[in-house]
Length: 73
Image (cartoon, rainbow, N blue to C red; front, side, top):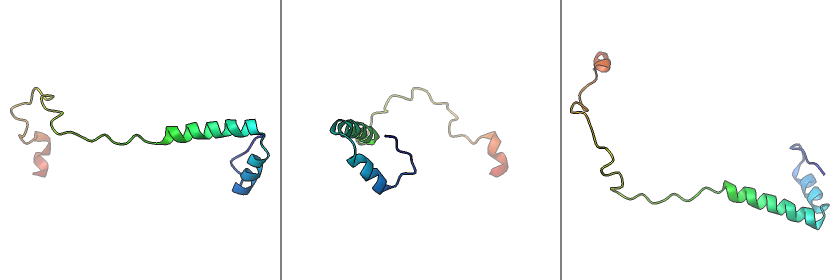
C-alpha cells in the first residue's frame, strides 16, 4: 500500500489500521530509527582554558589599523 503526501491524518490512521502485524512492526521500526536520528546531541559543557597554547604566533602589529579602512576612520 502506497501513501502520498496528500493523504490526510484520518486516512493515514485508517491505512495503518489495515496493515498486518508484521507491516506495523516494520513501520514502527522505521519510525523509531528516524526519530532517534533526528534528536540532536546535548551540548557539551565548555571548559575554560582548553584553547590555551593553540595560537603560537601573532604579528606585532596585529591591533594596528588597516590601510583599507582609512576612508572610514
